[in-house]
Image (cartoon, rainbow, N blue to C red; front, side, top):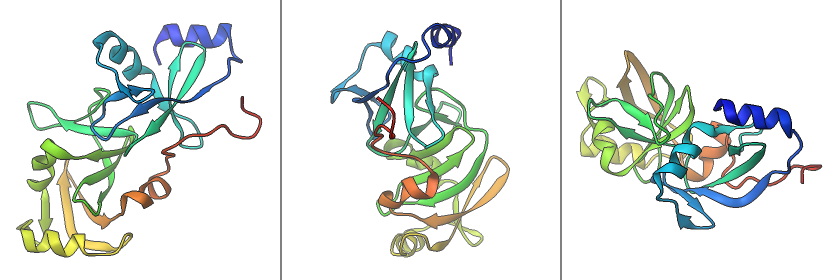
Length: 193
């Protein structure tokens, strides 16, 4: 969190949280009440003040007020930079992945040091260059075999990244929140206003 946010929290510790206003779409774009946020100044304020609480509800800390974020997909959306490294949609560099998953649509999910993340769309070339079936690079037949597995099943695939090898588990997007510990549609807990 930025210093101004921490100062505001000290000054006003009991401001009620907001639910249902802020969202993050599957491409890592911020939305307010469904409308795309395009102003760079607003995005530059949202990104460094985005975090998760102990229940796995992701939020934006706006000074003393917490705005919980409705997630279309994952809490973090990954992109590649010009040098083929992964960055979160908030600009954090991914140095370590702890687990890898393949969903029913072929998107790669990673449990990273920053939280649960998904790599989709234009940057899937990053994953395809690092996925292997045995000693061979991934081919269409092996990918189809992995996609046909039930959610939670270990696949024959492995992901080679950042000096480590991760087995790839098949995971339906509907099972991702429970498996990776996040909440897609945060709601107030008992006693929260």
